[in-house]
Image (cartoon, rainbow, N blue to C red; front, side, top):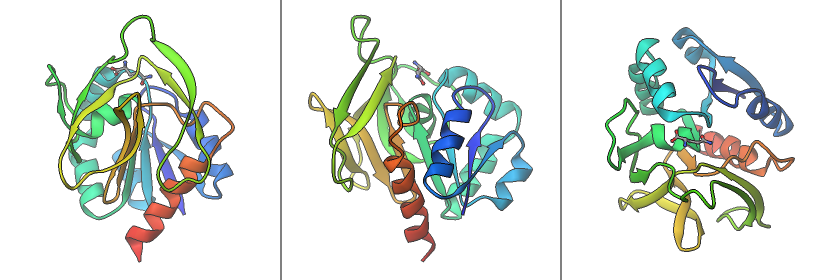
Length: 191
Ligand code: GLN
């Protein structure tokens, strides 16, 4: 299995390391032509407005909509969660609209700009270590969306078919179980 990490801006190398620990091949993706050889892609954390603009510039908006429509896996983390959302509260920056949800950027306020916590996630046995950095929150979801995790009653992880999204960074710890979960999701979608 080959999983790409969109490498236009943001935390790329850490995700590749986690993909490989989860037993798949990880590749940095800079051109749309690379998508044909992939089973899934991770859209990393970073700055969602910058990532969205670069995606539009390099043709990734249409290419990744097509990629997802073919049933391949898409996993958005932090800024990547904003990119896969249907609606961004108060914003209209370029994004993919792959998951029926409304997200709010930088939703934890200044005092809690970044923090770590142990978070129970549906489908994963023990809580995972989650790192939140100027993180977005999922404010509302449609009926197709399965909520996988909440923090203080707010939604921080969700899944819709072959698309996965987390508010936090799962790649900044030694815990690669969410990357394994994503690989399992891709296998399930294929069969
Ligand atoms: N605050 C960033 C944004 O709105 C996301 C932060 C992150 O990816 N760590 O795009």
